[in-house]
Length: 184
Image (tube, rainbow, N blue to C red; front, side, top):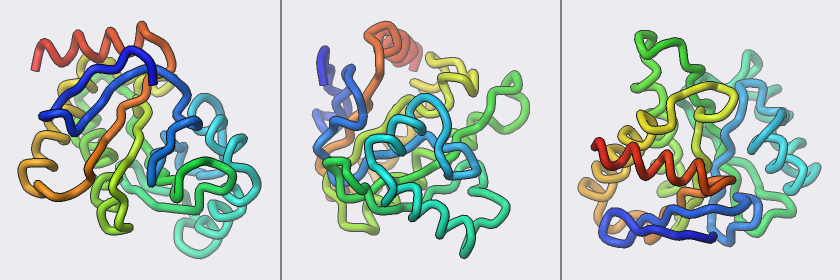
């Protein structure tokens, strides 16, 4: 990651780069409910992870989520060709103006991904900026939610996850995230 800043007493690093290049135990996929790839981060993770990721998602759809993964939930698959052990797929909310539970659903996507990583024995995890792309969630607002989730997670689980990375595709996205943290 480039342009890295540290948060939460150094346990969280935010910077720019491709999440598919991160060497961590788990990479979080900002998935759509269909779990079968798409654009942006979702498409990049499926492309880099290869058929193993897509096949694992197809199996999840058949066995556990025939109607798709609900917003805010998280599920893990193999990471295939990625440098991680797992891909944790989570569905963030589509922004509808902030009056449709979007804040709580975004917090749940992060919280459930962190809890799943912890249950899998992960010591490191990398997140993209969930819902802030085509789903339209305001990045500054998302930053406040993410920071609150991370602070609560580390306060209640001081030994969980040695490192959390927040990976932004562009420096402008990181700057907007940092601007939102200033409002926290």
